[in-house]
Length: 270
Image (tube, rainbow, N blue to C red; front, side, top):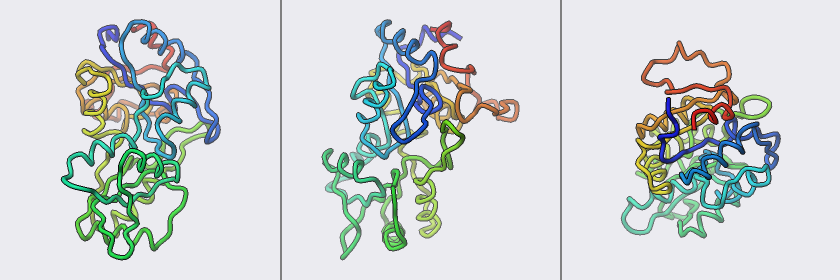
């Protein structure tokens, strides 16, 4: 395996570059800073990609810099970025009913996304589920009825959990998406990891073909699957949610190209 031939890199955040001990408290995993600095010094681009969507993308960048990681504004990809790219495929003005935090709503509105609540006959073209602090049955029913009437159901992520410092953190977004999908008999479209929308945005951000990238992360269903979608080199790290995963039980086509304990081990491959 020769990662020195990769022309661009995409890293997961939680469980790969950092461990999260609280909503605003992260600690760099040993070796993460060295790996990113070496890639930057080589002149090759990298991005970090999280399915977290409770804050704007640049807020993640500030949080990572506070933990010592050399991540600039504009280098973080999240479902909030990707839903905008997805909406470009619609014609005319699109009404989006969001399940999101106030910070995420403000980010989307600033980006020009028209948010609606589905009340009083307001047209809903898209229901978008990010991370939500709270919801209620009235909002869930409005969303389900909108999907039944033809709105697209988009979600940032549909996996049940992601890596936390003290074990898996259950996904509220997946819970909300599942409720709407069940009530409307619709299949959600993922716009975060893994999705073709994500692959397209990775290519755009890095200016590199996806088959010339390396995608590194701790989750087989998210990060490795994302890399396989783009025919990228895939690296699974054991420092997060896949620590105890037995790859012998995984179909060969879903396995990573390389498995390491932590990102620190990548230094010998770069």
